[in-house]
Image 1 (cartoon, rainbow, N blue to C red):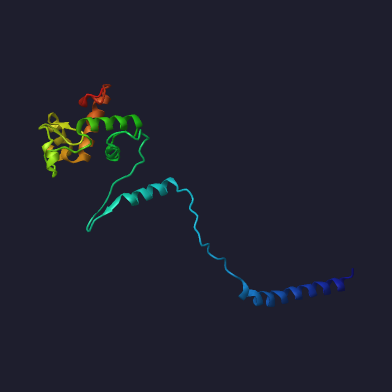
Image 2 (cartoon, rainbow, N blue to C red):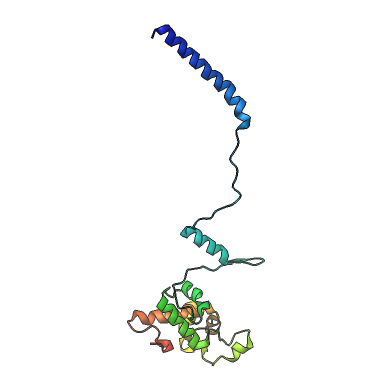
Amino acid sequence: MNLKRFLLLSIFTYGICALWAITGVQGNADTIKTPSVPSTVTLGMLTPQQLEDRAEELTTTTTSTTTSTVPFTRLADFHPDTKCQEWFQTAITVGWPNKTETLEKLGRLLWKETRCLNITPLSSDPKLADRFNGSDHGVAQINEIHIKYVEQVFNMPFAEAMSDPTLNLRFAYLLYSDIAETGSCGWKPWRLC
């Protein structure tokens, strides 16, 4: 092939490509369509962080002036007939181990002691105040022999501290763990050993 034909063919091809680029793309620019948004949304599995965020959103309670958040933890599996399950989330947040055996035994303890009720002389419910035995306070029935210890830990009067179920369960855990650390049965104060 001679050089003149090669140059002519190259210039001709270049010219056609340039003409197509200038006229073809501009002519079709109006016909280019943007992809449509699907009408349905498919959700995938949430990451552990997303689950935690959702749980936090669901456990946040808003009042007219304040917002309080109760931490949420997935509880260990336990038998569906376990008593006093409504207290397990609170118990976990104050230190109780999130273990099946512990939660089931804690449920038995709360059922045995109070039938899952927060029995205290300071209760606004007269029926609960009437059930007060004179010495054992709250859902875990903390005895008055612990007055000094409770007042030292919570820096508030014994009856007031033990009327709060959260503090009551926290102190119950402190009793349990203090005894368990010595190698004894932590359930001893409630005679569950």
